[in-house]
Length: 108
Image (cartoon, rainbow, N blue to C red; front, top):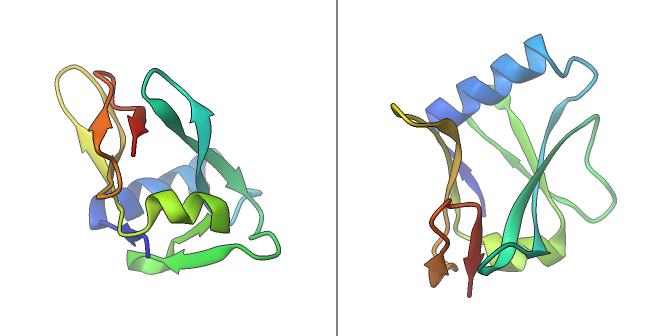
C-alpha cells in the first residue's frame, strides 16, 4: 500500500491542473541506479497500465505503481515537503535500509 499525505495530494492536484492537464495521475516507481542502489522515478500519465496497483489519496488523487516497484515501496508514505533549501516529494519508505544524502536513492 502507498499512502498519500494531504500535502502531497494538494501538490499532485495542483500540478495536474496547472502543468499536466492530459494526465490523470502520478506514476511512482523504482529503478536500479543512484548512489545507493535504487532510485525513485515519477511520471505523469493518463491512466494506469495493465497490472498496476492503484492507490487513491485525499481529494481523489491517484497514484499508480507497477507490481515490481511495489515490492520495494509497500508501506511507503508519499509526502511533499518545503524547506529553505529545497522542496519536493518525499518518500517515507520502511523498506529502505539506507538512503543517500540527496534522498533520491536508497538501498534495501
